[in-house]
Amino acid sequence: MSSLTVRKLDVDLAQGFGRRWLGGDAYRTQFFNALSMTFPIGEQMFIDSLRAIPDALLADPVLRAEVKDFVGQEATHRYMHIQYNAELERQGLSFVTEKRILRRVRRIDGFGVRNRVAITCALEHYTAMLADGVLRHPEWIADAEPALRRLWEWHAVEELEHKAVAFDAYRAAGGGYWRRVLWFLHVSLVFWFDNFWQTAHNLHRDGALWKIGTWASAARTWFGRRGLAWHMAGPVLAYFSPSFHPWQHDNRALLKTWLDSNSDAYRAVRTTAP
Image (cartoon, rainbow, N blue to C red; front, side):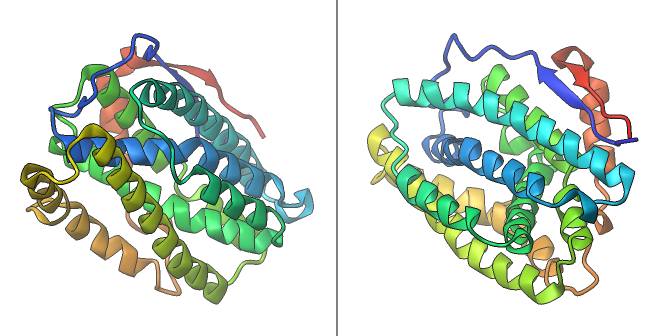
């Protein structure tokens, strides 16, 4: 039986949210907005890559069930971030990296299964690192508007919950070490270039790109005491170990704490039996 649960989040984004919904901080708001803009495309790519694995390679019934629920969770995330991004568009924030990302995804769709899933593994590792930070360091988004804080925390919980599914599917499909780490190096460059470019564009549209306070916030966000750079350094290096597995960093206690404390925020939609 799958260890995953597909959940419907009790958040309505139809009413919109503030232009600087994260504590009035332009940099942090636009950084998270830039991430959200890429999620619907990325999550569909993850879904398609795992669906492309032949059934014969997914012999383990538990893994097959987890792949199905991985797809269910990612589809729900995609739906919520489409709503989120519609509000960003209403606020005048355009998705300037969209065409480039779509062209890249079309190329990836033509790759072999192992390459496609290796790329998904790399991106899932980044989402897991960011998800861990959102839950481990609540000050990252503690001053967010309640609906947006709930959305990001729920997304973080489910990213941690399924963080090993693509990796396990990759190994089941016969994926090896060098393919995995070489794609991780490539994905790291592309992912962060796209995010920084989109964040800068968002800040420009927000009228905050050239303000000292914006870049002071960026420095704190990345290099402060619990900044992103320090938080991700260890997990990034861990990915290069030949014996790496996502659950070597067991953070299930973080997601359990949130689920127990926010049981009114969601309802289970479906779990998959083998």
